[in-house]
Amino acid sequence: MFPATARRGSECGVLKVGDIRATELVERFGSPLYVVDEAVARQRARDTRAALQREFARVGTDATVYYAGKAFLCVEVARWMAEEGLNIDVASGGELAVALAAGIDPGRIGFHGNNKSPEEIAHAVSIGVAVIVLDSEQEIERVAEAATAAGVRQRVRIRVNSGVHASTHDFLATSHEDQKFGLPLDRAVELGRRIAAHPSLEFLGLHCHIGSQIFATDGFRESARRLVGIYRELAEAVGAPVPELNLGGGFGIAYTSAEAGDAPDVARVAAELADIVAESCAEAGIPIPKLAFEPGRLIIGPAGVTLYSVGTTKAVALGGSDAGSDPADAGFAERLYVSVDGGMSDNARTALYGADYQVRIANRRSAAAPALVRVVGKHCESGDIVVNRDVIPGDVAPGDLLAVAATGAYCWSLSSNYNYVPRPPVIAVRDGEARVIVRGETVEELVAKSVS
Image (cartoon, rainbow, N blue to C red):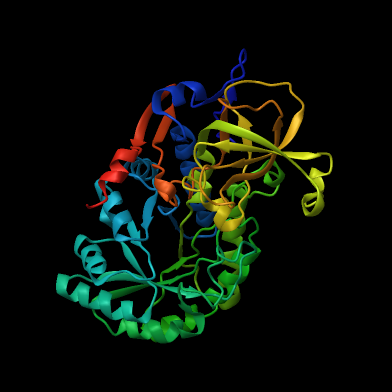
């Protein structure tokens, strides 16, 4: 679950990431600490882009890969992605500003969002973003007006709901009908016709995102079939071939060893997706359009590790309703609560989605008997859990360092200052070197925001 470069020192067993000891990182930068392995992030970006482009070239078309900035975006990461040949997908004016600060060509930026303000739209159009994804009827007129005012022809996609519900948490499934994103698929032809009536808009095609943390391609198969099925009618409505199909992202990763065998391999997924689209287009009797994808978690998630310092431990007997709640707990008479110096403020996913993570002692090797542990934070919430369940050496104690794997995506992005806890810094490591890529906060900075 840890980055491909992660190792334990042969003598003392200290975890190394990017050839740097976890203990050294915490000594230099403090705890808690987000660590991102630059080499791993870049390699995963290269592999993802290469696999998708190779497989869609095999079926006779092109694929453009956008890095989904919502997973984790900062100036440095945006540069890594661009240097590895990926475009950047943003979902707010703030994310757009970060991409621009990184020097990303606006012609390589896609702009998402279900409630883009008129000011955000006008700015995006004026700087020449590659494409704006229309998420509501009102945005058709807003983008058309902004493009007319700027004297440009803005490229747009329609985000639609295919009705395919990915096998994931309800809050992560984004293509069933009763939710805030997108427009009904059965209105796509009508909306395409409205777009074509605006000389200031260029219609690229449909966009659909069926969810997040998806392991199987079945949902993509059915979604692609439904989308492609209306492309002939859509082309007739707009008076021109529809050149592109964006199938979004949502590819899952393994967060625990139990998921390792199920997590998708990017080369296999790319091959399956190419076959799915080719088959769907053949069935519909249309040429294969250009494809676009928006992976985020798949690229940055496994590149990240969070380091914590243990403050207290507390053994709680398992009995009554707690006994046997998980069959794997049957061999344990108690659960050891391990409190760390972060929590739901730096990783909200466990509280939000019931997400699972894997934890290891990072500052030493231990031969102690295993203990059932729950890693919890320092916030005033019973749901302040970082790792709900894992088994680690039972001698874990105050002062130890813990490393939680696969935290590169949606941890810093969803972080908060609950209980006035400062956000940790983000450190990039590579080949024995470490540098700050997002500065951490101090309590003094948080207090200074209060106006007296």
